[in-house]
Amino acid sequence: VDAPDAQAIATFLHAARGLNKARIGDFLGEPTAQSASVLGFYTQVFEFEGLEFVDALRSYLTPFRLPGEAQKIDRIMQSFSAHYHTSNPTVFSCADTAYIFAFSLIMLNTDAHSTHVSRKMTEDEFIRNNRGIDQGADISVELLRAAYRDIVRTEIKTMTQFEE
Image 1 (cartoon, rainbow, N blue to C red):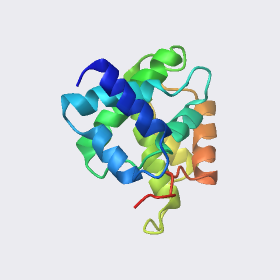
Image 2 (image 1 turned 180 degrees about the vertical axis):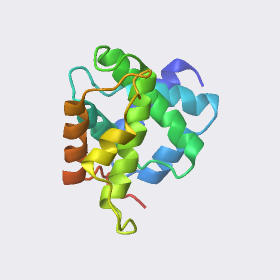
Image 3 (image 1 turned 90 degrees about the horizontal axis):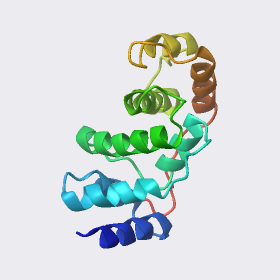
């Protein structure tokens, strides 16, 4: 698919209402050249400059449902992390740190809000789990504490309207 078509599809997926949110996530995570191109344009629609990391992640994940397949999630989160880092180059030393931290927050979100998890992760455990994720260095404890409290207080939910 050429760039104008991929951009048009991305704009449509971002703006259209009533689409199946699980299918959007599945499509964006597919390993095809078309899906990769659409994913790139879809991610660029989001304005992350100056946004706190959790706010950016929340805004990015809300319009669709992450697929269940790890490789699809990986592709989507790579796109998010690269765009966030480009938009906010001083928050983390590299896009890989944003990627690792995003996954950590997704796991925390599941841990904190799933009824299937009886022993919830503590704030200190979360901080310990994220030591050294910035190319061997620690990200600020203040950022970790704020992110932990934000996620525990308010679950990251995908749009539920017309989800299934």
